[in-house]
Length: 221
Image 1 (cartoon, rainbow, N blue to C red):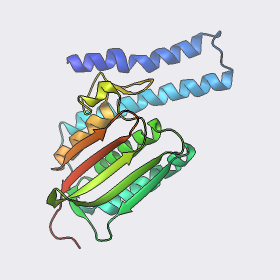
Image 2: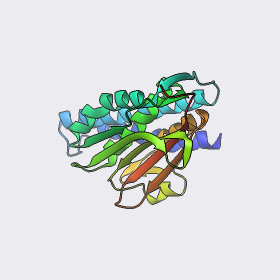
Image 3: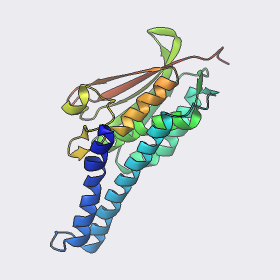
C-alpha cells in the first residue's frame, strides 16, 4: 500500500502536473506546436507508467503461458520492431545470434516485451552515434542455460539505481528523468517466473549490460 501511494503521489502526479502547467501557463517560452508536442509526450509517459503498472499487477496474479520457442528468433523479431526508433535517435543495433536454435520455455508476449523494454531503455538514454549490442548464445557459466545479453555504451545507470536496479518504486531512471522503476521491475519478474536469472553490469560513463540466463528446454533442434 505504501509503494502504491508513493507511485501515485509522485510518479503519476509528475507528468500530470507538467501537462497542466503547459496547458494553463501562456507565458512559457513555447509556441503552440511545441507546447502540444510536450503535452503529448507527458501524456504518453503517463500511459506508459499506467500500462506497465497494470502488467506488473497481472504478473503477480497469473500463471505464464509457457510454450517452446526459439529465443534467437524472438529476439530478432523484437529488435526489428524497435530498430526504426533507434535509427531516429542516430543509434545502431548490432545483433549476434548463434546459428543453432536456442529453445526455451517462455511466455512469448511477455518475453518480447522484456527485450523491447531493455533495448528501448538503451535507446532513450544513449547519446547519438552509440551502439547497442544484442547477443544470444550459450551461457559460459551454466552449460544447461542460454544467455541473452543487451549492452550499450551509454551513461550507465544513475547512482540511485545501482544499489537495487530492479526496485519497483521511487528511483530515478536516468539523468534528468524520474521514474518508478517499473520497467526494470517488470523485466526481473518475467525472467524470474521463466526460471531464469538476470544480472546487470554498469559504471558511470561506461554503459550498461543486462545478462539474462534462461534454462534450455529439451534438445536443441
